[in-house]
Length: 211
Image (cartoon, rainbow, N blue to C red; front, side, top):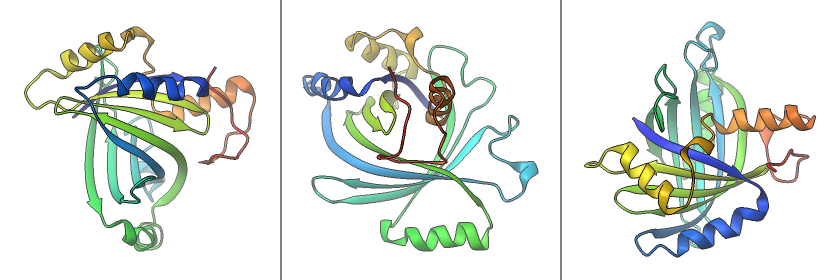
């Protein structure tokens, strides 16, 4: 079970957030990563992951450290349930499987052409990771704005206590967190700002902006 909270900001806050996290000696900066995430749907429409009944995301993510060039890749399944948005923090089912970065093309072929999964959407982002044994805090630059995500990693402490501890240290308020996913935020911005919604959210395309 994953427990987290997420906040959105305009691009002008990107470096400020990174600089603020750099000041905490208890956090290790793992670096900045370029990531591309592709989301697939079930081949049978009645079992769509995007239905209200399931409300899940099947994702393939490739990540490369922009300084060292080291790369990783994983398949992940993330699913909300009836209790996900209850309480102080988001609680979602999450399962991850790592695979070799160089095998992505073969995996994509199997998913689309053998299993017949549908490629629904994708997005790019730059992810800055700060962590210790209890917490992972990331600053993500999406094509439409910046997100700060605080996720519990402790195996011994209560997730809500760990997250609330860091919310306080960062001067945030729990009630200001955005409780839905990145694609919900992107869709909301497109609708409010009357901008075309792209299935593949990439830098350089006309995008709405978090204000």
